[in-house]
Length: 183
Image 1: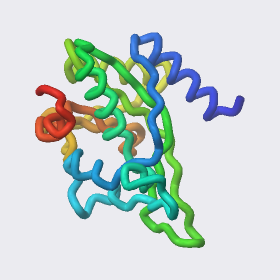
Image 2: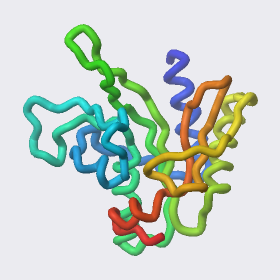
Image 3: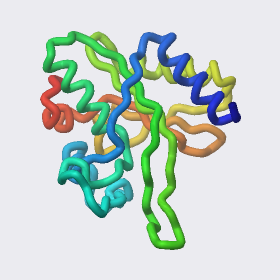
Image 4: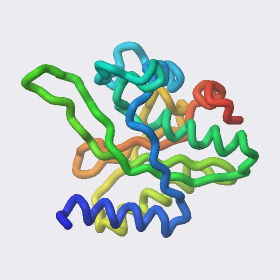
């Protein structure tokens, strides 16, 4: 296996060892998911690749974020009276800022974690720090930040070597409401 595949295997094993269940969701989504997660009109994540021949409106673009997929998983589990859950998906998103015939979309592999029930921000932070330790990443910072989908004041970004590599936080109550997940 190459370096990327080994890192992927380590991340998946680490998530499972911490009690998270792996989920696999569709890469095709509805354009309406961006409204459900409060993305502003000018947010670059709204620049999605449109399928030429989609099966329907619900799967007419390629996802640029896995947050809506994860919220669907949590909503479905919560609606079935599952009191708590911890999930992860390590999959691709497709970013198309400069989509032309010469410039293809950027495929980026991302780790998305979703937890609900008897958990809080510090549980999530612990899961991420445990993964960073497993990957032998010691020089990182967790800084306060803002994200349209997240609760103001309860959001942080992960910075490694002065590069923003991720975001973590509590989902905004308005977004939770749109997915029928209680606050």
